[in-house]
Length: 316
Ligand code: CP
Image 1 (tube, rainbow, N blue to C red):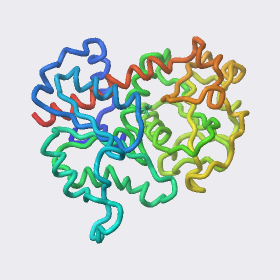
Image 2: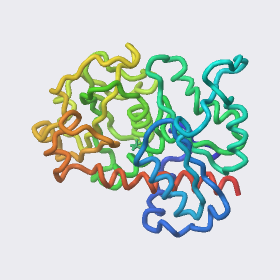
Image 3: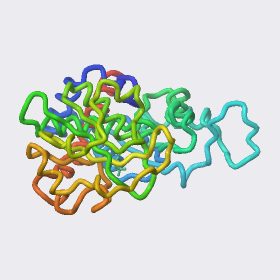
Image 4: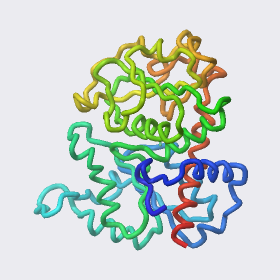
């Protein structure tokens, strides 16, 4: 693996999930692989899970890890080529990425979308620029359109909890007070399609995701119908894709409640976290037996460690 910025970078999902499972059963079994190597984690946005789990994954592999909040601690970066830099930006990504590549063997970048400039977001302006100018592999710690490390953890979690070969997995929109990105649902849809599970996406009208990503999946505006016979419920909010970045609804009828979970086939509840209680999901569901959000978050370490392992092995 040369980079990991999208689920499309996965060559063989079964093999990657198997690697993650093996790592989980023996997290320090390959603790020399990253010896004398450095992972740089660069954040333009806040994080709890991605930051700590990726750092832990690196440490488990014997790698050193350096972390920087680029938005608050670094020079303000310029991403446009040919600009006269007489404004607020102090350093061009061309120099920054090349310099960082001299300090790090792998670079992780988190950069959320603007949710106002669809074209720029679709181009993954920040992560694409790092990939272009860095001379070392780049991994996404969540970009404008995808969160592939989260998706690998999600696939691993479903693999661990599924009781049938082809479970019914429902990705449901749920209300949230703020406009949120499409990265988590996009990557989740991609990885569920790769997994070959029965995937149903439920959302109110106007919340259609990128049709290039969702094509082939069943899409409904009826959440109750979607929940029937479901084995897994994955709740997530996202803003409108067509009316880009807008909040069109905060309909609390879409909150995942115990009553809704009772429509399912005793489904497990997933969410990438952080989650807004009693907006996205009720306390009863989140604190109940069906919720597997904590083991799901635990799997972030093994997903990251599997990806780092593939990149380090490829670079040997
Ligand atoms: N799920 C996830 O990416 O969590 P953080 O934003 O806390 O990293």
